[in-house]
Length: 254
Image (cartoon, rainbow, N blue to C red; front, side, top):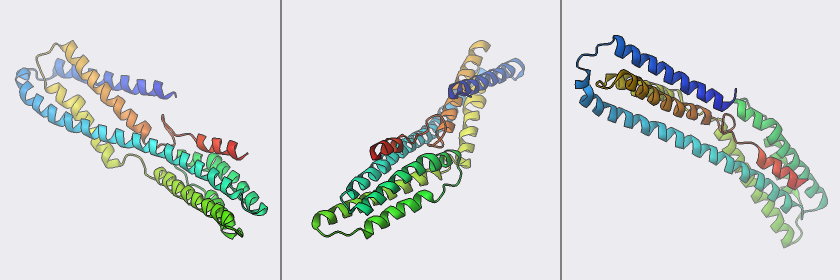
């Protein structure tokens, strides 16, 4: 199902449910003296709502930063792969051909094998790491008879190290697990308290206005929770990072 359709259904469902609960509370609940609760309920709502807003904002910003970090790391990894291959082009024929073949194979492995596993949470195969290690060995064993070749060999090794670092960061983000169970518990419980429990303690408004207020609040909070859910895994969901950096790298290595 389309992400926008699914999100709209979740928001509409939460708003409808909250509206029904608000109507039942006003229709059958204890209504006498409810306006007298407004001052006390307002103070509690300010504290609880503020704390919940801080938690939601912190989680959203952290996840969004994680998506940006994954995108930057993927670009750095692909650029380092191309730079290492270009530096190795100055090495003897057998070495440079070997490095280029392994670089192309590595980019294909990341794009075709690793990225789908990062998206579905499966185990990432060791093929990419093996190919990267073979590239390192090929560069390390290449003869360097003058300063220029030694400089190119060093540059290729340094670029391969940067590829390895970016790769490790990419894999570490895949195993982060998104939002933990404890945080989800706090988010959901805090949302119920903020959007359902506390607003229904207020009195003095018309029934229709009360229903609209509660429904709008519940729908808005549900929208934020849905955004958090979509941002959990930077390799899948509504804002998934595509392997375009490696597609571009393959074009440059062709």
